Image 1: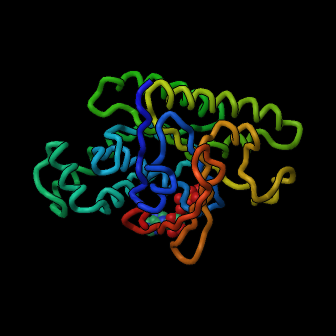
Image 2: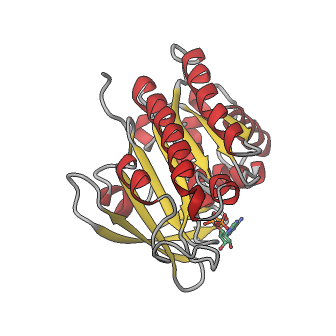
Length: 267
Ligand code: ATP
């Protein structure tokens, strides 16, 4: 078993709260209402995971399972340009791209290189999503000895298809069983390939959620047990978001702040 890696958000207060960052070989669940910034976080982590260790990354690539058609290459572009100049310079050097931060051609080449290391797969329904998680194992294996092995698997959103397809009380057990199987294969990718697994989840703040607590994430207990780290996002004034760490093993519950900016998620 390889040593657990820590992937930084590059927000010191949050990274400290997480004991250094998002852990590999674990599932981290980020949940919150619509527009709270869940997709912003998955995009930012898809960039950060590629950075060299001294810049907070894991020097790895990302598999991004996109279930709601929310992946935006333009957003990755903005986030790469939004990195600190020193980080950009060292990434350019590492990737053998001539030029420096702010230099148009160099920045374009860097963005292209970062995008090439994000494997986006769109899931059309829950069965397809389950299949893509199984495929992720193959992609991770393919890149195992690569300069950039898979170090992050994002599923954004984990629950949307399941929620839409398994409607009503009678379907609940079935839904949980499928979701559990899916989580199991995500977990396998994380454990076998030393990757962080980050999944997003909405809260049940919608009127169709007639069972369950409206402030609780969808998925109930099974998801609760599988996701080792749970982070709750809450909208605050303007672009400010409250980030809470809930029920993490060996870590104190905590609360921090982030901002969603054009340059990415920032302190
Ligand atoms: P949903 O559950 O609806 O998918 P979410 O939690 O994934 O929502 P995001 O899409 O991650 O939410 O976040 C949306 C927020 O990010 C909005 O407040 C939006 O203003 C902000 N945002 C998105 N793109 C940018 C950008 N380029 N510059 C600044 N803020 C942005």
